[in-house]
Length: 138
Image (cartoon, one colour):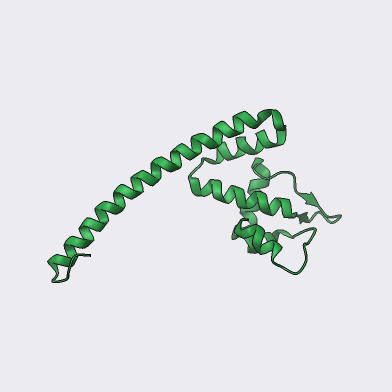
C-alpha cells in the first residue's frame, strides 16, 4: 500500500471525496501541480461539485501515488501522460503499458548501477580522508 493510500485509509472512515487542498496536503503536491496534471491529461477526469470545486476520490489518491513513483524513476512527463492515455484506452493497451514500464525499469536499474559505482568512489574518498586526517579507515 502506498504512503498516500495508507494515509487516506488510516483516517477514521473512508471518505468519498477530497478537496484539492486536502489532496495537496496528503500528497505534498501543490494545487497548481494537481491542476496541471489534470490539464495535461496525467490525471483522469476529476469530478466537480455543483459549485465547480474539484472532488478527488480514493482512486485519484492511489493514481497520484503511482504517478509519484513514476516521477521518482525519472520517467519523462510525456511518457507518464502516454501511460495515462493507454490506461484510459482500456485493456487492449496492456502490452504497450507493460513495455513502457519495462523500459522505465531498465533505466532505473541502470541508474542504480551508476549510483552504486558513485557510492563506491565516495566511500574510497571518505576512507582516504579519514586515514589522512589521523583517523582510521572505515
